[in-house]
Image 1 (tube, rainbow, N blue to C red):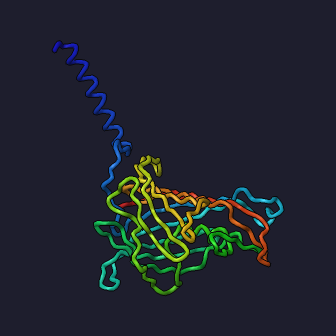
Image 2: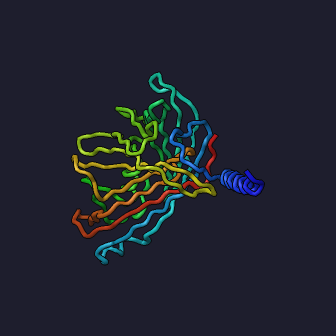
Image 3: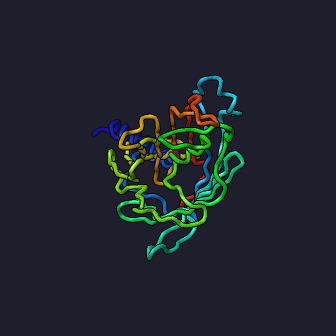
Length: 280
C-alpha cells in the first residue's frame, strides 16, 4: 500500500471517529437500543407541560361556550419511596399536575419485573380537573363527561378511583412490556364495555430537552363493546429515560346542553412534552 493510500485511510478514519465523538457528546445515540427498561430509581423525576387544544367546533353557534380553545398545564412525576402492598415491595410514583387553576395529585404503585413494569395499585387525591365547565356536558364512548379535560384524563390515564383509598388493580396492569419488540401487542385492561390494548409501533428519534432520544412508539388501542375506536389516537414515546412525549387526539366528541340534547361536536387534542428530567 503506497503512502498516499495510507494517508487517505487515516483521514477518513479520523473523520469517522470525530463524527462519532461529536454525536456522543451532543447526546445523539447512533442506533436505537431495544433492551432498556423504564427508569426505576428513587428520586428520578420528570417535569412536563401539556397543551390542550379544542378544534373543529361545529356548528359555530356553540363557540360561545368556549372562552378559549387552548389551555396549558404543568406537572412533575417522581419515584418517591418503597413500600409494601400485599407482601409485594413496590415503588410509589407521585404525579402532581396543575391545570387551569385546578390541582390533581395521584400516586401509583409499581414493581419492575423481567416481563415489564407492573402497576399494582393507585391512589387519587386532590381536586378534580375541570376546565371549560359551563352548562354543557360531553358524550364520548357511551360515557358522559362534564369537561373535555375529563375525557383526556379518561383517555390518558389507567386509573379511575377513590380520592382517599388505595385501589388495587385486579389484575395488575402491565404498562410497559419487556423486551421492546416492534409490533408486540398486549392487553392493558379488559372489561365488559371497554378494552384497552397497547402495541409497540417502532422506534423514532425525538429532540426533547436539549437531547436526542430514541423512543419506542407505544400506541394505545381502545375498544368499546369489542369495536375498535377509530376516533381516539393515543401514542407514548418511551426512551431509556422514560416517557418523553404523549400525543392524544379525540375526534367527534358530542356536546350536550343542560337538558341532555346534542347541540354539536368538537375535536380535542393534548400534547405532553418533558421539559426537565433527572434519571438517577
